[in-house]
Amino acid sequence: MKNLKKLFIVSFLFLVISLSTIVSAGDFDWIENINIQAQADLSGFKATLATRFKIGDVQVNAVLSNVQNPADAYMVLRLGEMSSKPTDYVIEQYKSGKNKGWGVLAQSLGIKPGSKEFKALKLGHDLQSYNSKNNNAKGNSKEKTHGKK
Image (cartoon, rainbow, N blue to C red):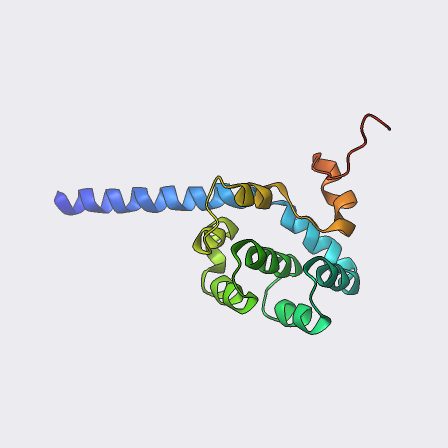
């Protein structure tokens, strides 16, 4: 009976962890839009990353060659910036825990849930050339119209 109870508790905990990972994955659904746009214009995406993160083509290509999708490169660079960790370290963490989700990776880098940095990640990206295509549709544009149309 004790073993059955332990099995039930372990199964329940696994279910809770799995559900929380699925729910938190929805927080980063904007990533798929970046992948679609980046695949349509990879050279433009590379230039956007280089400009946004003030890095060279060599570093952009190095990050892209170490991740599964173009948007993952953005997330690796952004998480490194937010956590003040070197890109190589973030890539190592990405590779070792990429199936756990971006929220878990952010937390492992010291970005606390509920912090302004974590909330900013969940809201969307900050790539200027992608804002009009992606964030405006969600009402997250950084441009202010001050009542003008």
